[in-house]
Length: 467
Image (cartoon, rainbow, N blue to C red; front, side):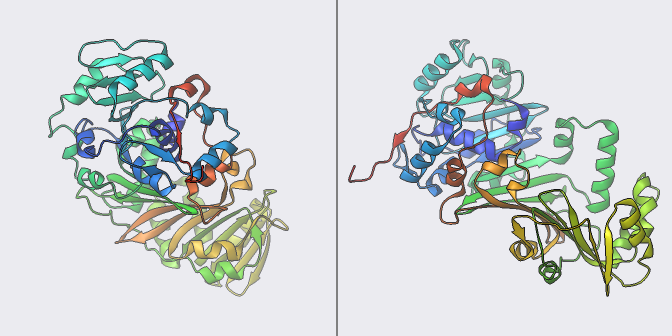
């Protein structure tokens, strides 16, 4: 499985759901026991509450079986993705209560508990064509297990060594992830997905070069005081998916946002009648513009430093709309004075037509159109400092355009003196769980073909009393 899949929480949850459907449930499963086998220096830990996700999708869990709801079964019948069908063909004996994915260095692992180890051994051996080998910890290619716990390597080398697992199992409480202050929050699993990342660790894991890391560090220090970790949650509900990410300091509290912040004026957005496929808005009070100008001076932001004087007239909400044909239009709220330099930048460098209406500069490249209107997206910006709303159909080459989604929004909003990122995906059907909507759209994220057969599961259909 490639790293691209591992970086996508939605894809990972869907794979976890597929992997666990049809398995027995062990009510004694304890997420704390899983976290105790994760190294303290893991850069990312993500727990998936598969049990909750399945129940919210209408599936029944009777203590020993997971039965698909008629809606889930019907959605699967509609999918045109062959990988999805292959994923529901076997029996792995995995406890569907919860699984955990963690990253150590650049290695990615999935771990969980086994309800029936013998079934796991049989299913994995058949799929990999290699029997489990070893004493104590037994391995078969990228799979490993010992007693009632399993591990799967999701890294590109597709292998796992018994010595790695032995090290995980021998961790003391002081050296395991249970020593992390956030571990207690994850034990409760009050969300469908709950996770933590160390900012430095994850930046190193994604492979930024030295210059990129320095630029990232300077930007982070400009925005936040003592930003150390990220915490995030996600939930799949009827008609929507919501994820919230917060930046945490070394004391486990929200990291203070250092710049003056204001809220986007929703009335300004709704008042700009029009439509588009993508909307971006930001609240830029004059005080914030001045503060940004001060921070970029002498810190290597040469391009920003050169153009910041042109932005000093900005004071309020700015909006950009992009149509499905790539044309752009929008508005900038200003102080009403000294707008000539900004107007010249928009016309000479970007080719916009600019009209001034009181304190607002309207700019455009012509008629802009798309599936979303200003009134559609204005409520999404409420309470946000900066944000974006996009129609998944904006780019027909993007897989998300075929996932049954109407719009996706990403909003940076104030939270306890800090900022949090709220991501929301809205489906076309508000009455059914968004997991079902994605399945019905017929294009769930694919597992790479070389590994597509490694996550099969037996499905027991949930029949109505009449059938």
